[in-house]
Amino acid sequence: MNLTQLSDIARAIVADGKGILAADESTPTIKKRFDSINVESNEANRQAYRSMLFTTSGAGEFISGVILFDETIRQEASDGRSMVQVLKEAGMIPGIKVDKGAKPLPNCTDETVTEGLDGLRERCEEYFGLGARFAKWRAVIRIGEDIPSKNCIAVNAHALARYATLCQETGLVPIVEPEVLMDGSHDIDTCDMVTEATLRAVFHELYQQGVSLEGTLLKPNMVISGNTCPQQASVDEVAKRTVACLKRAVPAAIPGIVFLSGGQSDEVATLHLNTMNREAKDLPWKLSFSYGRALQAAPLKAWAGTNIEQAQRAFYERASANGAACRGEYTQVVQQQ
Image (cartoon, rainbow, N blue to C red; front, side, top):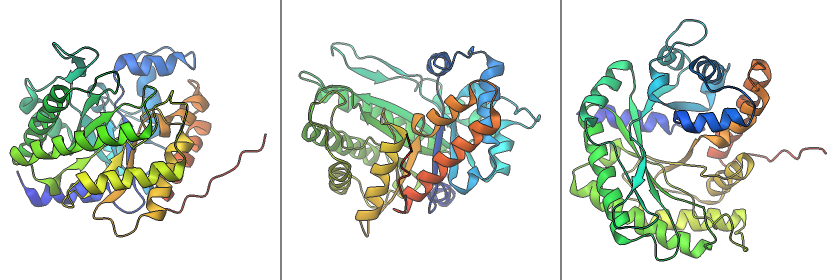
């Protein structure tokens, strides 16, 4: 483990005005996305779609890294280059999803624990050899009646830390993603409380297991109202509450925080990030993005299986908007009806 190299990669991922494209959808998830545009989800179409995103001219101005799925890191782009080579030549760092998904947690109703630690050292070594330089592991924390339990938070935090140690041992920067889901009718106060408790548990485990924070990135949810809560918090309140929560729970040694969009619309996710960076000053870590749907919804719709030029234009626009939001310089474009 070369801590200097890990730190350099982590800082490069959160370089000014840049963030991450999360393109690590599992096969069932991307099938749902393709179903929405009536395109068959086969390997050729998945390759064509992701190749379209990765070869978008100028995307590297705003996208520092891309999280890949196992299938994608082994694929070639439409021009015959490996996907990894395409990203590197565009100035983007290849990353890889390494967890095996959230599975039911025994004795805990409606709660999950993320699996994938078995064989992880060997998988990380292989992915490093294929060109990946960072990885991602997602834990899922659900808010509901009497949940999350302390056990759910504890076992997921422990697994995140075990994953992070194995990543750093094999030369990969770990992105630690403890997602408190926005699904539910809970208010922003509840999300705030659960998010802080989760982050505190995660960083306790990272410390206990000797993870270098300087070579680690955090991918959290924003502090936000549940999606069916009758009282939705404003953009300003979400930004203010999120930054305050992070200040209480995230050590200054972390180089950057790359938010997940978690079901927010592309525009709202951009506005929240922009408001945080515009209003919050002298933070110890960079605030950036690691968006999936919030970067891909518009280009996916435009692509519809064939329209590469329109889709790349839409992707560039979303990437550019979020790059500006990293600087607190995004200006919302009002669409004419």
